[in-house]
Length: 369
Ligand SMILES: Cc1ncc(COP(=O)(O)O)c(C=O)c1O
Image (cartoon, rainbow, N blue to C red; front, side, top):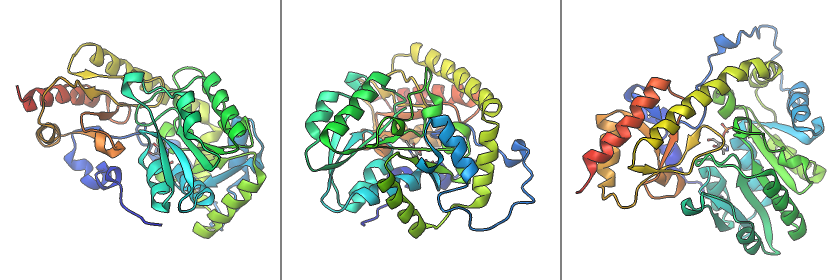
C-alpha cells in the first residue's frame, strides 16, 4: 500500500479550525448531534470486546430495514473502514476496477494506494451527472474485479432510478464481477429510497453508515452488507486483523438511535427539505453558478459558469479569508476549482443563506473583466 493524504482530508474544516469559519458549507452531513440530546444512559454498559461481526441487535435492526438476514451485515468503524475492507479484500496490485468519477475521494484513493488499475466512469456535468450503462458495459473487461458506485452521489447529490440499478446489477452478474454500492446517503433520498443493492444479488456489496443522515460521524459506525457468504468471511477476517471489534460504546449509541429512528430522523428530514428550498431558491435567482439539481443527500456540486473569467485562487481566498465561508473545492474531487461542493444542511439556515450570498460576492470581486 502506498498511502498519501487526500486534499479533502488535509483541508478538512475540522483541521482548518471551526473557530475560523463563519459559514460552513463544506460539510457532507447533516448537523452533528450532541450526546446529551439523545437522552441515553449507558452507565450499565459492559466494556468488553463485543461480537466480532458487531452487536447482533444492531445488525438485526439494519438487516430488517434492508430486507436481508442479520448474518449478512457486519458493523465497521464508519463506512470509511468498510470501503477499506472491501478494496483490500478484492483488489491486489494491477487488478482492474471501474470507479465512478467524481466520487467520494476514498473510493478512488484506496484502489490507487493498492496500485490497482483504475478505469474511470466519468459522470459529466453536461449529461446531468447521469451514469451511462453502455459506457459502464464497455469499461468492464473479463479481468474487472470490482465496479464501484455511490448513490445518492457525493458530491453531486444525484440518484439513479431503480430500473437503472437493476440493469447495473444484471450487468455485473453477466460480466462476473462484483458491484460495490456506497449507500451512505441512502436515507436522504428525496423520493422513494432505492432498495439496498445487496438484497438484489450475491454479486453486490452495500456499504452505509450512521454519519451522514443522522449526524453521528463521531461514533464511527458503518456497515457492510452482502448475501455472498464467502466474501463476508473475508471481510470478517480483514476486520479482525484491523480492529477485532468495534467500540461497544459506539455500537450501543447507534443501536439506541436506530431503535427510535423514525422520531429522531423526522426533524432532520424536515430541516434538509427547508434548507434545500433555500438553496433552490438561491440557485434560481442568480446567473453566476449553474448546477445539476440534486435528488438526494445534503450536498450539491454547482460550478461557476465557464464564460466568467475569474482569478480562481483569489476567489477562494476572498470567500474564505474575507467572508469566512468554507465550501468543498473542486480539487477535493479531482475536478477544476470552478466546481464547489456545497453542503446545505450542516450549518444553520441563516448561515447557509449568508454563505450562498458570499459566494456571489466573492465571484464578483475576483472577476477579471
Ligand atoms: C460517499 C461516502 N462514503 C463514505 C464516507 C465515509 O463516511 P463514514 O466513515 O463517516 O461513515 C463518506 C464521507 O464523507 C462519503 O461521503
